Image (tube, rainbow, N blue to C red; front, top):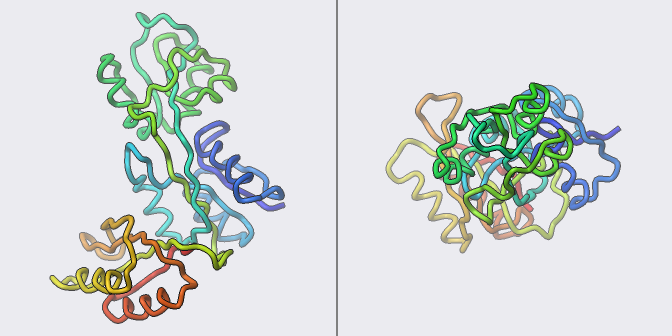
Length: 271
């Protein structure tokens, strides 16, 4: 049995992304399995070369999900594809009497994406493990004073009322997920985007030299972010996304030049 792991419980946004991944990437022989992310990366994917996981990595409103990014790098995973999931948050409760509302619970990212709505209505926000679990908590406790932010699908599953739909601050609220695996190979030679992890020396010119190599090859950067190194406190490496495919001859030559001016170059993904 091939396994597709997702983060958090049924009808969390990660579960919805896993459902979408099976359709978009044609994975009919994969079965959905929920597991905590750290366990998936540490045990499940490491022990099963056929297993995959779908991981939220970035949101258009609340930016990079750094805890997932760090976990992904720590366990040396490969990226197979990316998926963009529109996120529409709902305010869920057993009733619609706003006068009884004391606080709202949800995942920190969801609370951040609804910050404008919550602050304008003077609603106290309390962080919870994830959106679907927040809805489940409201149902199991039967509380009237605690509401949840989650999807309409979670409302159906846990028999809650949708008090208000679409409370996210931006209508174009989208989360980017990565489909990852261990020691997986690239699937196509027609891709034209890459994610690199560059480690440079602590010199004034080192990052400039690496960026100049990319510029000299007419490679367009779509993202550049410094992230902490786990093996050297307060030192950093650079997560770079660019429009260039792994299989192009020009890109191969560019990687060779990057190796000459960087301490290390890792291709996380190329498609």
